[in-house]
Image (cartoon, rainbow, N blue to C red; front, side):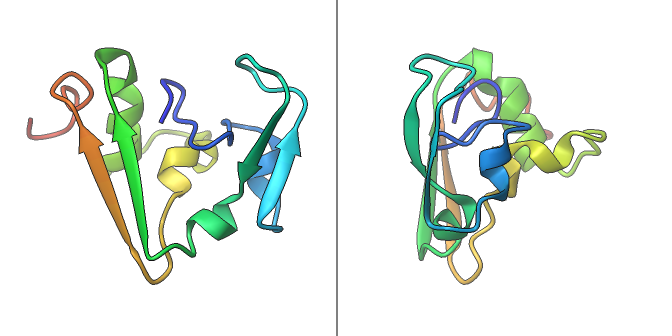
Length: 106
């Protein structure tokens, strides 16, 4: 997961979040490189296990907004990490101490 809450190459507020096919491409990534290929949320959420690995304090706020039960405002629905919700599988987070530093109860 990136500091903006992106997963795979699915970025906040990007039209790729609405793609229903299993794979998509983008040519306007907000981070280099601009051209990317990515699995989409339907394929990610159909996995039996999804692991999100997050390292570093720069991602702590995005981790908090993705995991904790907080009202993150009108843009909460476009935070890709928060949209990862396996239908019949499990979601496992691997966080270092810095990435977990803003979680409630930590």
